[in-house]
Amino acid sequence: MHTLDQLSAFVAVFECGSYSAAGRLLNKDRTTIRELVKAYEDILGYALFTIEGRQAIATEEAKRLYSPARHVIRQSSLLEQLSSAQLGHPLAELSIAYDGDFPTPFIQDLDKRINQQYPHIRIHWLQRDREQALDAVEDGTFNFAICPARMNIQPKQKLLYKNLGYLTYDIYVGAQSPLLEKADFSLLDAQAETQLICEHTNNAGTFVHAYSANTKIVGSNTLLLELLPHLGWAIMPKHVAEPYVQAGKITKLKTSALANNILLPFSIYYPYSDNISEFSQRILGLSEELAQTYFVHS
Image (cartoon, rainbow, N blue to C red):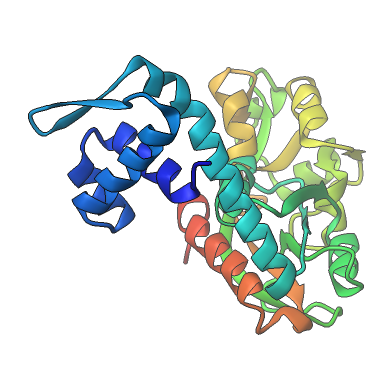
C-alpha cells in the first residue's frame, strides 16, 4: 500500500519535472524523493518517470495517476486541517452581514481568501440593514458585520470595530433628465424633486438619507438603477452607479445643494469576545488588506 509521502513525492516530481526541484518544494533532498518514487513504482509494478538529462519525464501511466493522487493529497490536507480545527477552533460556519452598498468584488476577494486559509469553514454572506446587522453580531447570530459607520460615534451595541475606509457617493440623474437643464440644482430643488433612495441606505442613519419631501424608497440598488433613468435624482455609491454611467443611462449631477464626492465611512464590527481570537484577528487583517484596494483613505 502506498503512503502519503510517496504520493506527495510523485506529484511533486510530476509538477516540477525533476527530483531536485521536487526536493526543494517538499524540503527534502533529491535522494529521499527518488527513493520515495522508486518505492511507489515497486508497489505499482511499472515506471512513473523516464530520465532525460536532469528532467524527469512522466510516463503515460503517471499521467493517468496524477489527478487521483493529487486529489488524495488534497483530501488528506483538508482532513488534517479539519481535525486541528475541531481541537483548537471549533468554528465550522462563519456568518457575515453586509450592507447593500458594500462592493461585491471586496466580498468575492475576502470569501476567496478565507476559503484558501480555512477550507473547512462554510461562509455565509447575508445582506442586512445596519442596526439589524449590529444587533445580530451582538447576540451571536453573526460573527461580523460590514456596515456604514456614523463617523466616530460608537454603536449602541457592545461591539468592537475597525475602520476600513470611505466609499464615494455622488448625485445621479437619468442621462436625459430635465434636471440637467437647470443652471444649478439647489437645495430647494433637491427637496422638491423626486428622490430615489434604497431602503438599506435610508435605514443606516448616516448623512446619506432622504432629503426630498417626495422620496421614493426602493428595495435594492438594482431596482433604483432601473427607475432612475426615468425619474428624479439619487445619491448612490460611485461603484454601483458607474456601469450605468458607462452605459449612458444615468449621469452625475453637479450641484451646490449637496456636496459632490460624498465620502461615507465603512467599518467591520465584531463582538468583544472575539477581541483576542486569532481567527478573528486574521479575518480583520484580511479585510484591512483588501480595504486598501476598494476604499478611499483620508
